[in-house]
Length: 48
Image (cartoon, rainbow, N blue to C red; front, side, top):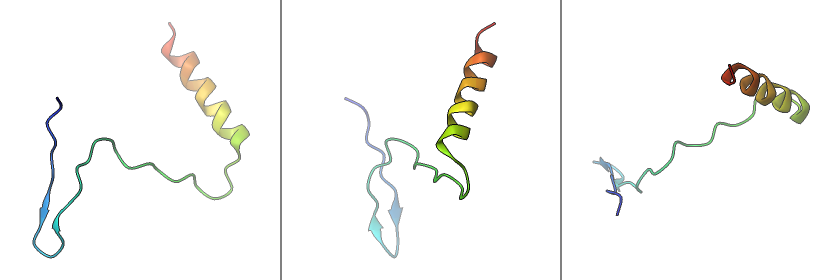
């Protein structure tokens, strides 16, 4: 099993384990079409 890492905050106590990074909100004014275009650009760059 994976090791569960929890952090301690003196004011809040034990914090929930962090398994994945927090999702980043989409900036205002960015359309789904722009996000798809960015994803396609990344795919093109990764393939030699």
